[in-house]
Image (cartoon, rainbow, N blue to C red; front, side):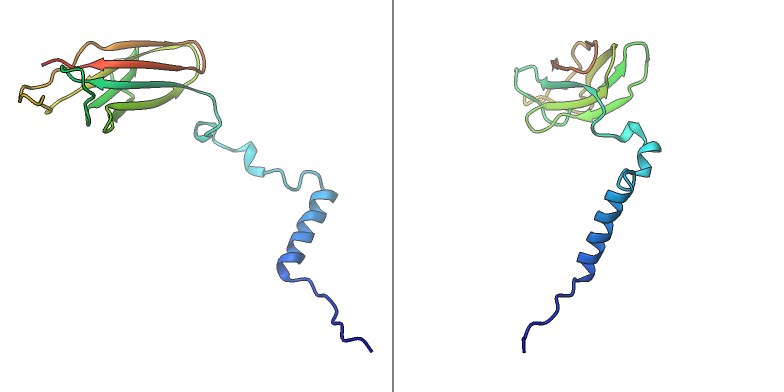
Length: 142
């Protein structure tokens, strides 16, 4: 007489086998129904253009905490606002495609190490043809 016990699959193994069977028997079973109604604006795989930059102070050192505003060249109001990090850098994804953007620093309320009020420098215009990366520098004045 044998001391062997029959092997009984667990609930998880049963569920896996059912899914595998349905995937083989019904080819469309594993394709997501949500893919038809998926919001493409939130898809991280969607192509994009990228502006990467550094905010520089009058002493040519990077400046932390400066508000950076980005707008389309044909619009007056900024659509994107972000702040420079501890190394003075910032990055913003933008829709891919042919477009011009204006990037400006807004150092409102910030002062240099000498105590003088920081003023915005010249705005930078960036041109994109498609999905690409452009590196820029924003220079502040005293």
